[in-house]
Image 1 (cartoon, one colour):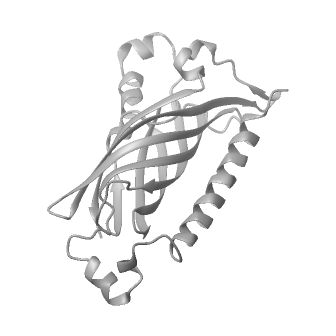
Image 2 (cartoon, rainbow, N blue to C red):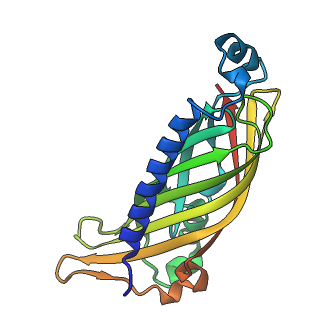
Length: 240
């Protein structure tokens, strides 16, 4: 029996969030280093080198975003919730990617009669990090991390956006990441990460006269239609 991708991803997301919340709460009451259980020593551990909250972004997805033809304007917040453990949440606005905009403005695009698009949407992500090599009470060092994200974009005919016809693109993704986060002068943060995972791209056509149907994406290539995902990323940020 074939399992619906949306149901599978939503169940996985709920399980992951419940696991993170329960696991993080348990860390405050057990399995912490003894010096963290003493209020005075906690204050001593949080030295000037400690980084417990970070705001990050990445300019590269502006050129080519996570969904077809998109560019993403992203912001991610990370907070240390216990010794070696942090939680992150991110949100992004999806518009036209700069690479697609260059294609759309090219003479070949116009001469071949392609339809210019109006694109808008959003993307959300949640992430848990375990800094396995860190000896500081800080968001720094090597880490392993499960990361889940969902993106949705709407595609309209730019010349006739009120026709009632549209395409909705959705992307479900989960990755197991290995990364390294460092701080320059203990203020400017660089976060490098990579890892394999699962993804599902779904494109649905909505027509005012005929209703909705799943779009044939065979012409978009093997990688677009494959469920295999591999992420190689870089975020820049500021420690708060």
